[in-house]
Length: 268
Length: 268
Image (tube, rainbow over all chains, first blue to last red; front, side, top):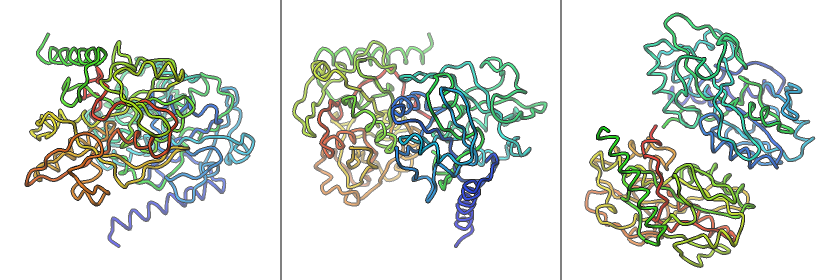
């Protein structure tokens, strides 16, 4: 086996080991875990909301790029051999009538309670963080071992059926002379949020205080750095809240589903 | 107005004029019409098939990249101001129980007959033909004023619900020393089929006779040229046939819906 093959096998093994840890109950944000393996956001909805959601995703492909759909009654995905979407995410959120009511490490009982949940796995900007770092661009929340900072913006998504809501973004501070590189590199991953949706002034997209993210952790911005904002896969959770969806299971922000698919798979 | 703005406005005007001609009954393949404006495949299905189809498209994004969904009862699309999806395509096909039963220039009566058709507009490889030509790569069917050649392959799509079928491809003969350029250029348009799915031997993907396309016109291949195959938006029609869908309206192959969206919009 050549070194690149060995590296790939090690990455797949790291993804499998992480999923096994999460299945066993370990809770941790997944940024920087199993580097090189695609991570995914998750939302599971009752069957009668599935059409509205898939349409919402189609109409808002930057925040909601669908990587796989697991039909009602199934819990496996082509993205990760042997994985179970009900157990292999470190932390799940349970939503009733648009309200967050619980966080759990095992969503199985909730799938059993609502026999017909359809699970959507959605691209995550973590996918292009490895290429950013390989290009010498610091990803601050990885440096600091924290969760990425996420904010609800004032930008309305295109509604679909009963679903509406504003776009959620993730923010990375980027040195001014690397902003262009960060745009180009992430832009080559259009199915995992792609290029930034906003560069600079947080107030222009309705973020009142950059130090107080709506999800995740605050991330320090050093002098000479520009806050750069990418569409975020937490957007479906904002839609759940804004639309009063009767029942949903999602991942907890920053606590993603780790797949066996190399980031390169989404590189165009 | 600067020359580029003027060129854009002329292209939009050409798209609008073409749609008006088709609405009035003109029938012609659309390759090379309104250059620089995105063209789209179309399929309209009864409401109870819409979920299966949107899932089929999500699972087969190379042949079925969805650009817009027009919900039941509506006939307008954000992709083209003032257009009506029932009338503005030059030629429609009517399908019953998986069989082609008619070709018409106005689909309005069929929408009326089946009150709840949902219309899907799907990316078309014509979108990257302008960039190919701008790079000096000849697009033979445009040179010859014919329809592009399309073939049903032996490659199964991922099924969804009641929908299954094989991938349909379009073929362009490319000079051997430009094949790489053609891959790179089209690959930068991932939401309109992107890079080729096959280069070279037609038999390897189940095409017995390259001179006898399943859809469109035969296209001559000159010495030194390689047949290059792209995923094609006629794939949904193959699924209609293979799955015995009870009712569908589609565009006729090569007779596309011309939008007001510049090709560049889909460039990453």
